[in-house]
Image 1 (cartoon, rainbow, N blue to C red):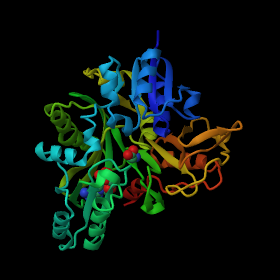
Image 2: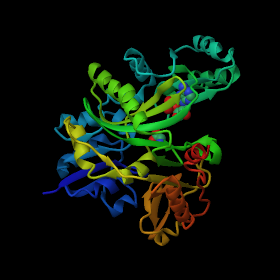
Image 3: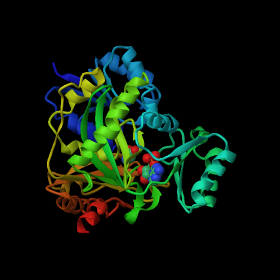
Image 4: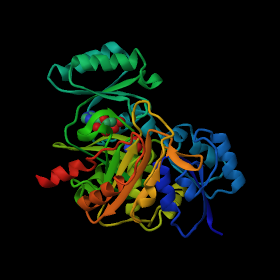
Length: 429
Ligand code: AMP
Ligand code: GLY
């Protein structure tokens, strides 16, 4: 008998995870809660919200699910892993205490400090007056300063202030106006780091880990990193600054001490360690950790993983990763997000999507905000689709992906035309 897998989520990230898991010879059936039209081609979609832990648990028990994989952070912060484990179910992801690595910046910064994991220098504040005094030491020296809400703020709780006026405004917005809700009652102020930013993904079982690879996201909505932040407009694997030596450095200086620290704190970390890093002149520094796969990074990571992902996710959940490895394909993978007009602000839904049947066969399409309306595929969210291509190198992957993007159309569709631009610039120097 093959295995039954439940994947929680409804975005491009979960579509990519399901696409990869569906290739496992051990899988009999995949369920997605709630899934989306793209996912429905590979899995049975069940209409349960990602936040309805009771119903998800009931479904997993009734259906005899062998492994549950959690996509987004919200269910992790609500303790879905703890609930499933208490019922004897195998689930991939961190417990609620371990998920504090993403859920509380104060927790993670204190952990980095205590265990000498390199990070930007910082202070924690819960009153505006002291916060204002502290930022002066940066702004009076003409330095930028970074203001962060402690809790989860949908990726928006970080403000980089160029001067005192901007810093003061950010503090007021977070602490007085509660622009990010309770997440901003406590803030962190930290030094601004200059350098090359990259993300690194590893899977841990609480003690050991399997490294995946590095990827770079593009957060701003417009070309040249202009405009407001989004959930991510595209990604590519293994930026040029990343190499074998840097991988070993990241493992030794960041991944291994973090896993050891979490274990020592009594909350061993199981699941994905998604490290946001800055390579500065003074060395590697951690910006933050996320407790889950990235979106849209997963859409480019999954096609680059060689072999079966399922045994690694199961072993992480069980705590026995010993001896397991994941190979990585050669070349590069690039993903471009197609977004609705107006995104990341308000946008229209229900635009007819055309061109998907004209794509080259090796193009991957991962759905995020799509729906069926009268039998036609239409837009149903801000980020609509990820178009993903592998190539023998970044240029090849880029050429392929943009030649496919041009074939797709919906009213108001917009996308970044400069995904992986940092990789191209750094190569042409
Ligand atoms: P975070 O959510 O902490 O990763 O911050 C979001 C983004 O803000 C990061 O991806 C960086 O681009 C930027 N950022 C955060 N902290 C710093 C810092 N100390 N110096 C420079 N940029 C930062
Ligand atoms: N791509 C950014 C994130 O998943 O948080």
